[in-house]
Length: 202
Image 1: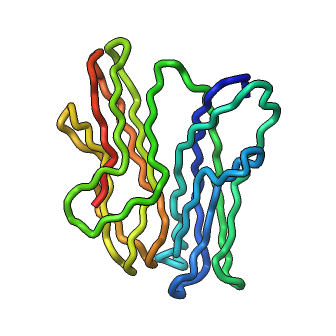
Image 2: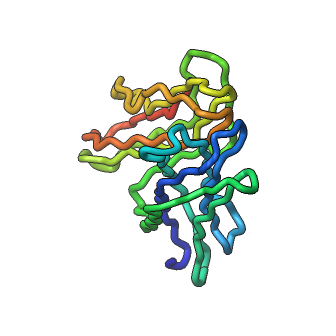
């Protein structure tokens, strides 16, 4: 990477595991070797074992910042099974690193948050004022989980200023605490005025 620069990392893949036993899952992670940091971690217990076997999507975004003379950097995509004897598989692995532009805007909340409420809760907020009017790409992602087998939860991107929401779907985990991806992307025509977005869950 360039000196004193920021980059956006987009990671995607599909993965599955062989077990249908309770609390047996496959894991996938994206690891930044030089920073000794896990940037993304998701898990799954597949629903359908055959005809055909389920493959579950992996997706995540991370911001990487580098100082002077950062040198070569390594990003590893790793998989493992929670129990010996289970088989975890991965395919279609893609890592895309894009140098950030000064006009880019970003917000993150990396700590786990929880709710038992059916009302929408805020996980992260981004307020941005575009320098000029035009088309902008808004991408939101999170790792979601529920604490009950077949428990349901929902996530959405709320364009608060535009009074529109995107991506709201009920999601049912197969096994309690499956950690699976939520992602939504929209191209929006924005004015050069303050705009607030919230990633919400319930």
